[in-house]
Length: 358
Image (cartoon, rainbow, N blue to C red; front, side, top):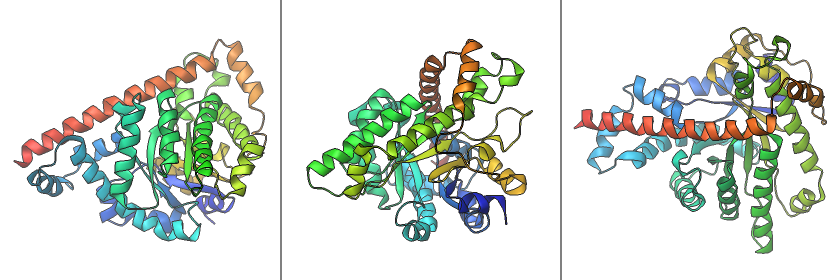
């Protein structure tokens, strides 16, 4: 049995953090579904920018859309939705078989709206409506303003992938926004079956601290933060507040481990996959990491409900001078900035393609 199948069988969903036109056209994504138990997909502006830059696969569609008057970010969304709706259709049988638990794809709102709640909600509604796929998540960053947008989007019935979470506290704020949206729907007599995932980023912790701590602590902080967050996740699912909503038909906002590609070439290339095997969660992997795990990964056990023993590791980092609370805020701000920069790069790439298409 492949390691990916073992991971799937213990109850963790394997999603791939990549999408390209060639993956769809050449049947690669279908093969990953069939051979590696892949049950979902995430995307971001950087992924699309890299594919647009390196591949001519979009050129004909760009020329067609330009003739229709499309430009800028809405031309991009037309291209992205074409890819993601194809992917959503590939995952549709999984989505139906799991009663909506799995089989999702994700599209991000414009990152430049990260601190504009009202515009984020409007774009989330518009994109989800345009896609016409029940298994499409809209990605909203878990910033302070994002929490407002998450609540409003859930209240409006839009499935949300909360992105750019870096700590237990940030996760809990996102979960609270999800619960508030459901509670408002309950008060209005509306269905509580509005799905969501909360994406905690892992490897960026270790990249940020690699040169600041002793060698014995390297590549341990991301896992400890993920374990601490998993503990909070399980505690929330046991809470009276959640159980009240569940009794009225709500489904859990699943915890998703994101940024699980190993950044340190000296560390295991499947470090974060082996360490974070946990039922009722998602691990979204870069393509390279997925292939590595399928080849030589191991599933030796699962995270305990307590999350293991992250406190000892977190205390060691505090002793080494790492302020994890401040670093979590910094990482989220840096992530939002990096996504915005990628967005502008993407729009510049599209503008160049438009010029060549005329």
